[in-house]
Amino acid sequence: MSRFNPRRNFDKPKEGLYVTVREGEDFARALRRFKKKVANEGVIQLYREKQRFVKPSEKRRLAKKAGRKRWEKKKAQIESQ
Image 1 (cartoon, rainbow, N blue to C red):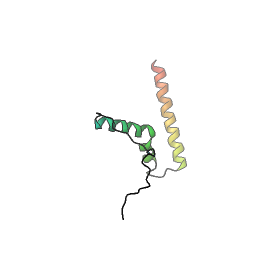
Image 2: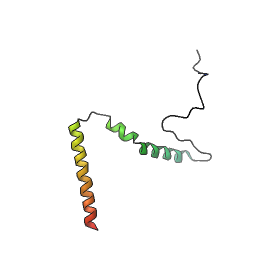
Image 3: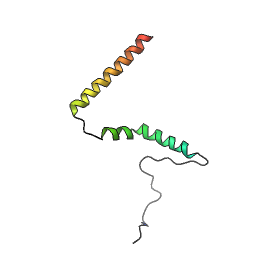
Image 4: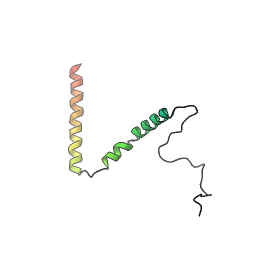
């Protein structure tokens, strides 16, 4: 039994994140572009969030903590001016 599927559509656009290596482009540069795409899409962050269950109360507590941290940072920036 052959694993080749003759009905496979090769003209269909690719799904997911991908980077095509351009003519004469270094692989490291293409890898850097791919890493940037992954970071912008939030794939790694989503993976880390889904590694364990976080109770809704803990989510709220962490959100408040992050808000306080942002406010303190903004307040310190305003005071330094």
